[in-house]
Length: 396
Image: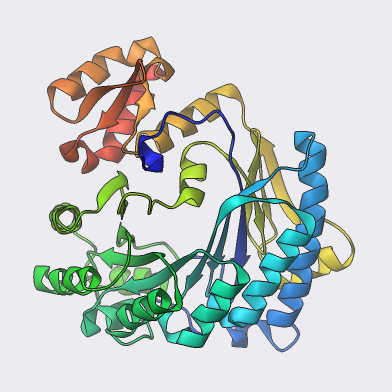
């Protein structure tokens, strides 16, 4: 039975997210907390980052023990960025070794790293497998050269598929490809080429995200100047339908609005986020959540390194979520999952809105081990944000 169809968990999962803030260059659409070598200078690089991250891992073990009353067993580890592969297989292995030194890993713990296709190799993947990694996530975005150019991606169109094959040959059974749809200049044929390329690789998971033009990015400036058109909502909905049809036709099921997997291929780390689990974020700008207390680290690698050198946790700000805030987040995250949310979690005053969306074919009721759940229909997925907004507004 796949994780998305199991009985709701009683164990609160605990994960570690490790943020590697380095990129060789900045993609035009990206607003993540990343830095190129020219922006940081010679003092701040992989070596100083690894030293600081290992110090934070040690302090995180102490702090989680204090907050939770025990040292949690780590169910999942996810290394993201940035470009984690820029610190090399040895650097990534060093991070996992440090986690093992200070935490206990659960049997069969999921250990994922993101990687950019152009900074990987067969030797890279073999080293990661030997180090205990169990899952690889590759940034593909598109198989069309002109789409990659608009996104300012550096890899060639065929490199992501080749990297996925290399990871599989090395022994990885769980491989994800990320794609972006709705890029200016992309047409249906471009997306179909991307999907055909994916379906000819040994991946068991696909994440597909509509292009969002984030403020402050190079792409946002081009859109503001009229150099690129803004994404069209109708086109995005059409492209989403094409993606869903192709992936489900190949045996992948959606388990979250933007994620599809073969049975057993779901990303357990991300499910921990969506189901309200606990996690600690290691690295500059990383976010954490422990039993309703949310906090995040200072963003700049220099300040991050300095604070840890002085023996301090690099926390910038923190807040304690009250009952109302936790309820809101629960609805926002769980309704995006195929498994949906238990209906009794929805306040009674939202019942008319629920009934209206059921009548409209956007939500359906399901029975799971004697519990009534609400979940989005295929039609409802296209309007997920609006449906969630309607429910939360009706509860006020």
